[in-house]
Structures are given as structure tokens and as C-alpha cells.
Length: 156
Image (cartoon, rainbow, N blue to C red; front, side):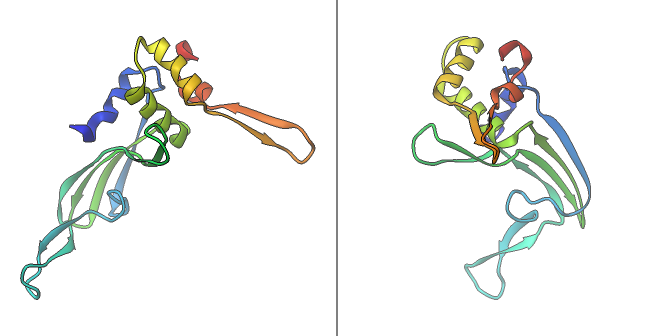
């Protein structure tokens, strides 16, 4: 069930993700390769090989890795469900505003905070900052806080 842990985001202070549909020839990876399965290799006994999936489902959870500390999350891919029927694919991809910042902050919120939703968001803002400053050539600086873009208005 850990693969579906991301579903908790629908009942959280974060804006609701949107569902993006794809219907067409196989083009969406699950996550790194097109949908495939393993079969025994008749040419090499004891070996397995990959073959394209003809019919079937793939359920892909939120892809992330942890880098330098236990709370240093890195977003890799969005969750998706894929159905393949011969050369055709239907995929439903869970997309969020500012994907990287959204999912990394949500992982921190979900795994490393305690208390009420408001207390947990305050802890996120304090311990998992999403405020970035960029400098323009004319000397002015641009400050952006991604929490303003990924949280519901009630929690900003």
C-alpha cells in the first residue's frame, strides 16, 4: 500500500492535484521504460528477458529519492496508472502545481511533521523552506515562496 501513499495528498492542506489523461499509442513510461514484463528466455535457460506488455495495468507510485539527510527529498516522477492494450495506452497521471516543490514539501509534511494541519504546515515552512531568491542583471532580486503556490488559501 506504500505505493498509494500519495493519495493522502487529496485530504491535506496542499492544493488538489489534477489528473492528466493520455490516450494514444504507447508513449508514457512506467516510469523509465514503456510498459513491459519479464519472461523466461528460451535461448538462455535460467535467464529472464523483457518484452513489451501486450495487455495489462501498471500502477506507478510517487517517485522520489532521499539525498543527504533523512528529510532531503528529491522528486523524480509523478504517480500514474497505465493500461495497455496491444499498441494502445490509456494513462492517468497525477500532476501538481510546481511538481518538484509540491511533492518534496508534501513528503516532508506527510513523513516528518506532527500535530494539526496548521502546525504541520508551520513546521514545514520553518524546517523545509521553499523560499528562493534570484538576482536579475539590473540588480533587483526576485523572491518566490513556493508554499504560496502549492498550499490551499486557508493554509498560506
